[in-house]
Length: 158
Image 1: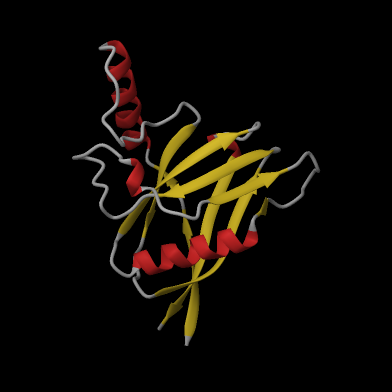
Image 2: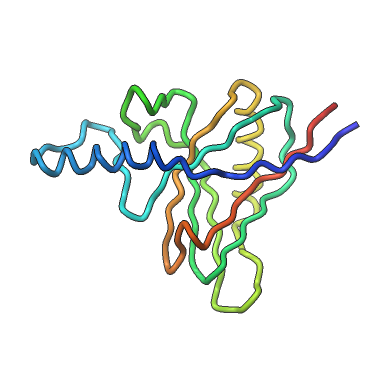
């Protein structure tokens, strides 16, 4: 028997701030990033998913954009320990989730369905060996942290 569980992406404001401070520090000292290092861009924030159960099967995404815009979600690999190391480009996973809403009122967010499904399945696979996972949310074309509500639903095998 399976049950559904919906996991909400939560902004990790502390980690986002640490990553922004890294960018500021490099700029102030006129230094360059390490080779392969991925710096946080101004339109990005770090989000996290906490897994209370490990045996999950991807069901569907629930992305609500309160206004027209584009949201790109990129997962990071388990190798990234954000409190100890810098984020490296090789630790970003493919595919990414791209969601958008056009100017139409009350229209649901659209996505590249095959990529979004593969992305959800990849997250479910990684959940088998992890308790938490980090993501980069990139906001564009009018989208912002305040206008996004994002969750992912899984089937849990009981």
